[in-house]
Length: 291
Image 1 (cartoon, rainbow, N blue to C red):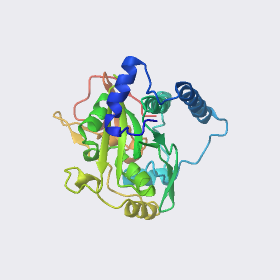
Image 2: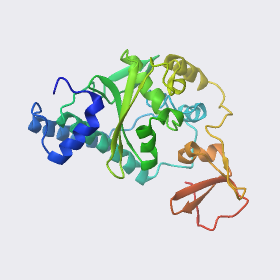
Image 3: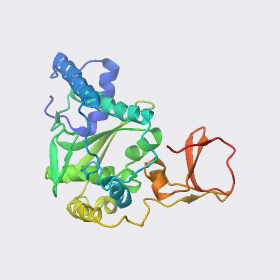
Image 4: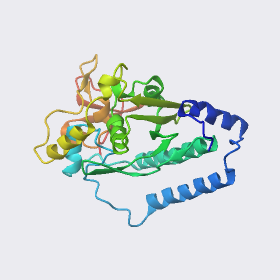
């Protein structure tokens, strides 16, 4: 790989690669194509292995950024009626495919990719980091256009619904680093961006949203999941103009919504389902089962 490459030029370098279809001179194109193919094989074997069953009722570095109530239900095996749908599994797999493609394009554009799937451990909790790009601890993400905007504008930590910041903070901590970032793609149109945060930049406006000890967070979680279920919900319901109350974004995506909101109802709008905990005005769209 080119020695003087820096992640700040990564997006433009990938765009240039896609325009010209010419890799950096230092890149062994055939070797990178072979590596990409082998990585895809590994991904498919992992997805469809006959012995892939595992106990997901654990704390992992990939989920420690989620809210306490959600993690309590995960670890304690709370029954849920809201099972993960087949199309959601396809979406998850699609995200893994995009990740491999972006890392391939990163290497093809002359940037270094190291520490792929390196095992990280913090306070006895294990995880696997995506990689380092040009020496920076990086998570590779595919996002909706709405979600991509947070990466593009640098506001992710201000509305971190899925706990991405604590996740990558843990990976960085395990590597002895204070800087970390994301390579993100808008999966609807292919736009790319790189977002980088630095825990040591105390003057940055975002610092108040990312500061805090990740070790303390994990110690808290390990004790929390042993106790009674937290009473504080992950997000508040939102009152609409007609008096209905809908679940917040976090709760709408959560498989434990029926556990936390026993009377929740789902309605099929053109833009997707809306989950209502209080119905004053009956929506004029089809009601659907939560199952």
